[in-house]
Amino acid sequence: MKHGNHTIHKHCHHTVWDNSLEPVISVKPGVSVNFEVHDASGGQLSPKSTSQDVPNLDFSKVNPVTGPVYVEGAEPGDTLEVEIEHFGTLSWGWTAIIPGFGLLNEQFEDPYLKVWDLNNQNIAQFADGIEIPTKPFPGTIGVALPEAGEHSVVPPRKNGGNMDIRHLTKGTRLLLPVWVEGALFSVGDTHAAQGDGEVCGTAIEAPMEIQLKFKLHKGKTIQEPRFITPGPLTTGLDEQGYYVTTGHSDDLMVASKKAVEYMIEHLSETYGLSDQEAYALSSVAVDLKISEIVDVPNYLVSAYLPQKIFK
Image 1 (cartoon, rainbow, N blue to C red):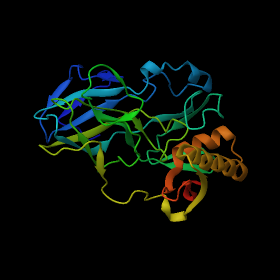
Image 2 (image 1 turned 60 degrees about the vertical axis):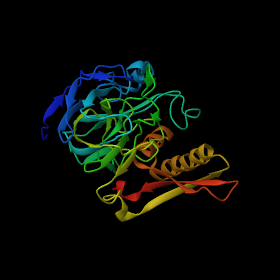
Image 3 (image 1 turned 180 degrees about the vertical axis):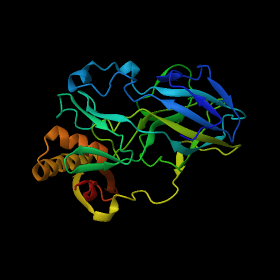
């Protein structure tokens, strides 16, 4: 692990956005900071956990974020640029179907847990003949909100938050609007891999370290996050093409559900996976895309499965 100018240990975490929280450190722009990050369960799950542990998760403890960091000179109306410099060593992770949570929660009422061995660093094995390339990124990353009080970290917001953007990988620069003095930046919910949409509600959730560098754009105002990637988005996956299912509806959510349902059907029929396994695999490897949104009354959503994960 490359060491930044400062390290914030994982015991310095919080589970709500609250602009009254005391910062754990104050840094100048241009400084690198190393963050220790809990997994999304906040330590409630371990490599020895089973599906029986999933319904007992305390949601008040999930998605802890490390911080907050006070960035000197940051004021409302500025933009905070966060460069993702480095990730630490991977060890283990988990993917769960949590009752009542996820895109198809009405269909998947039973808990499921997949514990991953990530010691290879580059590849995570889902099952014999199915391997997922790892590309670490933080699922939750953001700054304090201007509104007073406690705000859940579960949904994404104008401050960033639980965006689950899988392209926030090494080299990406994230632009965040500053809403309060010092920005009060925090990061957590690190993932080893995920598909666009994170459809079952979890990715490969994994504790890890992340090194970030801050830059301040004074007087540059944006309303919601933006980001700049350092290169192509899907290198390592494109080479063998994709199997794609589509779903249409006059409701984008319904179209998304149909595309995923058809992907689960394909995975089950073709590779002998259970519906739960196929749903979890879709969450960590399948990308949802809005293929068409103007030919009313129907929209079209496509689910892209990279063929390269099958050996």
